[in-house]
Amino acid sequence: MYALLSCRKRYESEKKMYVTRPLSMYKRNPGALSEPPPAGPNSGYLVIFDEEAQTYSCFGLCKDSNIRDLPFPQDKNLTINYGSDDEEALFVPVLNQPLSSNRYYVIRRRGKHQGKASTSSKEENMGTCLCCSFVHDVKPRPLDPSDVYQQVEIMKKNYGFHAKSVASDGIPSGLLRYKGWTVYTRTPSNYHLREALGANDSLRAKLPGVNFPLSNDRSESVVVGKWYCPFMFVKEGIRLKEQMKKSVFYELTLEQRWEKIFSKENNEHSGENHDVFVDVVVQTEVAKVEGREAVWDEHGVDDEKVVWFRSFGDGASERSVGLSLEIVDGMKWEQERVGWVSGNERQMRVERVEKFEGVMNKWVKFGCYVLVESFVLKAMDSRMVLTYEFRHKHQIRCKWE
Image (cartoon, rainbow, N blue to C red; front, side, top):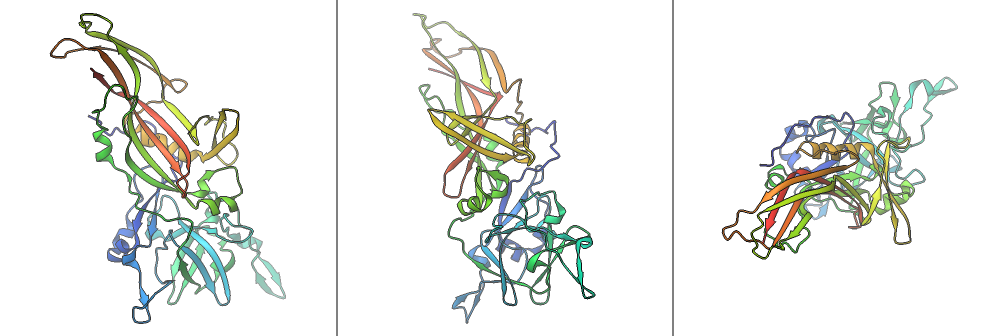
C-alpha cells in the first residue's frame, strides 16, 4: 500500500509550482475564486482562457479582445491601455493567495526591461516641483516573490481597472497607478498552456504495473502529476529578455517507473537455490541536464537563492540549469509526503533476502526493482531542460523467471 505520509519536515519556503484552471469555471462559479491554493508549500493557480469564456461583439461575428473582469488569464498576451499609452505585461498570480485576492506579479513583456517585474516606488521617494508632487518610478527588477513592492492588488472600476501596491507605502509604477486603465488580449504564438492539475494522488498510489520481462532494465513511465513553472523561477544562463522569448512557462511533470537495481541468474543445475541475497547501494537522488548526469549543491546557493545543476562529459561544454531553491524544496516536500528518504550523501543501502516460492521450485533469473519518481522539466518547445529523480527504498518489487 502506497500510503500518503505526513511530511516530517515542512518547508517554509515556496514551491513555485502552479496548476491550471479554466476561466469559464470561475465565470460559472465565482465562489471558486476564494478556494485556497493547492496543497503544498505555497503553490498557486494559473487561469486558462478557454473557448467557453470567449465573448463576442458585432452581433457575434467578432471575438472580443477586451478583458472586463478578473481574474486575468495567463495564456494570453495582455496589454494595458490608458489613453494613448500602452504597456505589454504578463500578470502572474501571487503565490500562496486565492485568486479572489486579485494579487499579481506584473512582468514586462516588451522593451529593455522585458522579463523583469514592475516594482512600486515608496511615498518617501516622491518628488516635488512648483508645489506639485510627482512619482519617481523605480526601474523594473528581477522578481523576488517575497518582495511586497513587486506585488499589486488589481481592483475593478466602473470602466477599467486600478492597481494598488501590496506594500502599505508603495506606489505602482507606470500605467498601473492610474485609475481606469483597460486590458486587451492577443493569443501568443510561442506558448500554449494546457490542463495541469498537480499531483494525481489516486493514480500515484497505484504504482506502475510490473508486467514486463526481466530483460527490461526499467518499466514504462507513467505520468502522475503536472504543473507549470513561470520562467522567473528557472535559470538557463541567458538574459531574462531572451529566456522569456524562448519559454514563458516551463512544463513540469511527475513520472513513475520501476528501475532495476540488482539481478542474478541461477547457476545451480537443479535450479533449487531458493534464496537470493540482495546487497546494493542505491543513489537516492539523480539529476540530469539535457539528458546528461549533473552535479549540484543545495547548500551552496547564490544570492538569488538558486540551485545550479551542472553537467559535464563527452568533451562537450558545460550545461547549467538553475532552479529556485524553493522549487527544489517543493519537489522534496512532494517526495517526502509519500515516504521518500534522502539517505546519507544521497545514497542508501538496500539489503534483503528474497525467497523463491514458485510452484515448480525452480527459477532461472531474478531481478530487483526500485520505484523511481522523476520530475521532468521541459520548455514550451518540448525541449528537455532537466530531470530530477528520486529513488524510493521503501518501494521494492522483485521478479522471478
